[in-house]
Length: 46
Image (cartoon, rainbow, N blue to C red):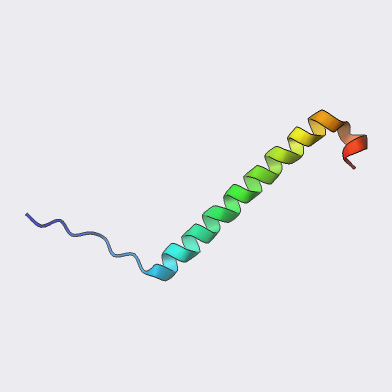
């Protein structure tokens, strides 16, 4: 029995990894901002 793998075009892999990277970066930025505000407070953060 032969298993056929799904062929994904390389441009879709590049675009998908780019979007995934942007989502991860946005999540890290939101987490770091809330962390810094909790440590510094709103006055010192600004």
